[in-house]
Length: 455
Image (tube, rainbow, N blue to C red):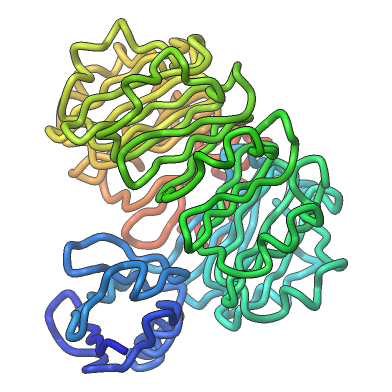
C-alpha cells in the first residue's frame, strides 16, 4: 500500500503521505484533496510527476505509482463544457458543480426535467448523439434527452445510483464503468445498449470503456477485450479474440475498432470500410506503434519516432500519401473529423489530409498553423486549433464550425478550452465565459448560450 502526497502547482502541500491501496481508484484521493481545499471535484485535475493527467477511474497499480509518489492537483478555471462529436447540444459544468445545457432541446439541450438533480455535485458529462449522462461526485448518474437513445436510464436506475466511475456513449447508447470493475448499459440495443450476451465477461475486471458509433469495447485488467453492440461495426470480435491479449489501448472509428498491444502491434476489426481491415499496412503495424487515433472512417497510428501510418476509407483520411513527407517524424497527436485528419507536430505545426471540404484542406489558414498550436478539436466536418497565445484558428465546413469570423475578436485571446459536437464549437475563456459558433441548431448560436455563461 503506497503512500501518496498531493500538492498544488506552487508546491504547497494538500495531502501528505496518504495511504492509498494499489487497487483503489484515484477518485477517492481527488475527493479528499478537493474537500481539504474546499472546492468541488469538478474543479480538480490530478497530474502525475511527469505532468500527465490521471483519470479518476485509474488505480496506483495501473499507473505504476511507487511509495512516496507526489501528485499535483490542478484547479480548473471554473466552467467546463462537454459534448459528443455526434451530439446535437452542449452541457456545461459550472464552478459550483451544476449543469446548464443548450442546443437542440429534444436531444439534450433542454434539461429542465432533471434540473434539481443537476443543481450541484456533478463531476463531468458524457453524450450520445441525442442524450447526456452526468456523473456526480457521489457516483450516481443522471440522464436526459432522447429516451430511446440513452436519455432514459430507468431500467438500470438502481445499478447507477452509486459507484459509477466513468460513462461513455456510442451514438445511441451508454455504458457505465463501476468501482467494482463491472459495466452497466442502457439505450438502443443495436448500438450497445444491451450487454446481456457478455454480462459475465463484464461483471468484473474492466478498467476502461471505449465506444465507436455503434458498439462498445471493454478493456480488462488482464489485457483482454470484450465487445458488444452492432456485430459488423466492431461489436463482435470473436474472429480475432485470440489476438486481443496484452492490449493497452482501444480506439474506434464510426464502425470499427483498433487495439494497440504492449509490444507495439495493432489489431483491427469491424467494418472494412471504416478501418476494420488493416491488411494493406499489416507489416507496418507489427511493432513500434505508441498511439492510435480515429476519424469517422479511418485510423492513424503514430510510431515511436512520430511517423504516421494510415488505413481505412481513403476519403476519410485512410490515405495520407499526399503529405507523407510531413508525417515521417515529429507527430505527437492526431485528431479526426468524420472524413479528415489533423496531426499536431512537436514544433506546434499542423498537417491535414482527407476530405478537403471537411477539414482535410487547411491551406487557407496555413500560416496560422505553422507554429504555436497546442491542441486541435473537431466537429464532424471542421477543426478548431488552440494556440499558445490563447487564440483559436478554424477551418473546414464553414457552416458547421469551420468559419468563426463572427466571433473572431472573442477568439483572439484568452481561450482555455474548446469542444465540438456534430456541427458547432464552444470555447471557454479565462473568465469562465463561453463563446460558440457553427450551426445554431446544435448550440452554435451565441445567443442560445445561457446568459450567465456568456458574460
